[in-house]
Length: 463
Image (cartoon, rainbow, N blue to C red; front, side, top):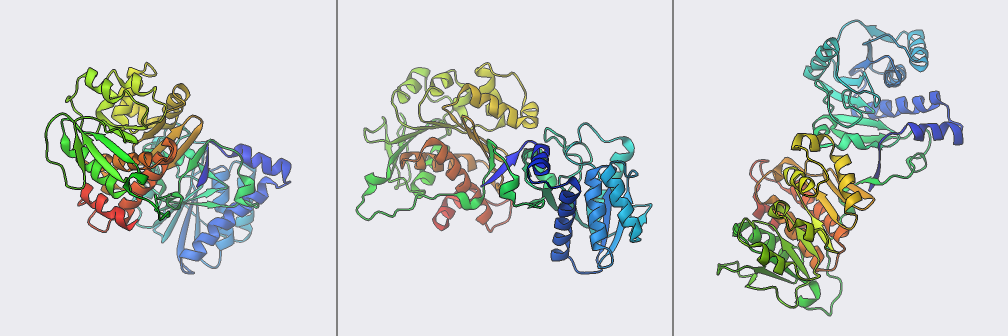
C-alpha cells in the first residue's frame, strides 16, 4: 500500500526546513533518478530528446541531460527560454558542457516530457496544443517527468495531454494521476527519491493506493471446521436471475460455506447453490440488487432488510427510495458504477450532477458522500476503483479492460458477499474482494475482448 497526496510542495518545504536540503539538491536527485531509469532501460548512444518548459519541471530535464551527456545522444528542446532561477542555472551548467540544444522536434529513441508540471491548470494555447499533438505522434518511448504535461490540478486531462509510457514522479504519488481519465496518460508510474528515503519524505494522508500484494484471501487454516464455519451468504434473486446466479457462484468459489438464492419464483439453480423463498435463519450475510429489476415491491424489499445481517448492495437498489433505509445499515457495502452513484447522490439530496461532472470530480464526491454517511463502505466502480469509509480512502488501479463485460460487477458483488459472510468487516471485504477481482483480470490469459464472468469465477481457484 502506498500513500497518495493532493500536492507535495509542503513535503518539499519540510525537506528544506527540517532536513536542510536545498531546492537545488532535491532537483539534482530528481534528475539523477530519471538518468538512472534511462541508463537501466536504454542502451548507450540511444537518442534522447528532452522537451523543457521554462520552470522547474523543465529544469529537472536540463539537469538530467547534463548527467547523460556523452553517454547518450542528448538533445534539449526549449519550448520557452528558462525562466525560473533554477531553470536558468541548470541551462547555464548544460551550456558550459556543450549539451546540444535544438530548434525543432526531432525523431528520437526516447522522448522525455518536462513542459509543465503539477502547477498546470486550464488549457494549452493553440501553439502548445499543436506541439503536444506532435509529441504524442512521435514513435518513441515516452517518459513524463513528475506528471504528464496537461494533467490539471483536479486530475482532468487537457486536450493534447502528454501520453506517457512511464511517469517518473518525484518524492511521492500524486492523487490526481489516478483519476479515471488520467489512466490513459500516465502509463506505468515509478516514484523517485529526492535525497531522503520516501518513508521520511512522505507525511500523513487519508488517501492510499492499493497494491495487488495487499490482498488477504480467505485461506482455510483451521482444521476442525465444517461448511457452517465459513458463513452462509444469501443472494436476493430478482427479475434478471442470471446476475444473482453469477454472484452466488462467485461467492461459493470464494470461500462461502453455503450460498442460498432467495426469491419468490421457482427457478432452476446450479447444484452447488441452494434456493429458498425466505432468508434462512443461519444466514450470515446478504447480497441485494444484482439483477433485481422490478421483481419486488417496496414491502417485500423491506422484509428482506428487516435484519442485522451485513449487506452488499448493488445495481438496482440505487434507484429505489428504500436506499435511505439501506444506508442506515450498520454493516453495509455499496458498489455503484458512476451512473448509479449520480442517482444515489441525487436521491440523498447531496448533489444534482451528471456522470461527466462526477467523473471529473470523483475524489470530491466520494469525500462528500463519506462525510454524510461515515458508517457506509463505498466502492465506486471505474477504471480506478475508489473504496472509502469515513475518513479512510483507497484507490485500486489494477483493473483492466477485460472487466468491461456484463456480469463482471455481479462477480465482484459475490466476492464481497462471500467475505462478509466469512466475517470480514465491510471495509476489509470491499478492499480484498476488489483486489481479488482485479487480480483475476490481470491473470486472464485470453484475448482482451473474450473474458466472460465464468472465466473470472473459474480463475478464483488459482488466486
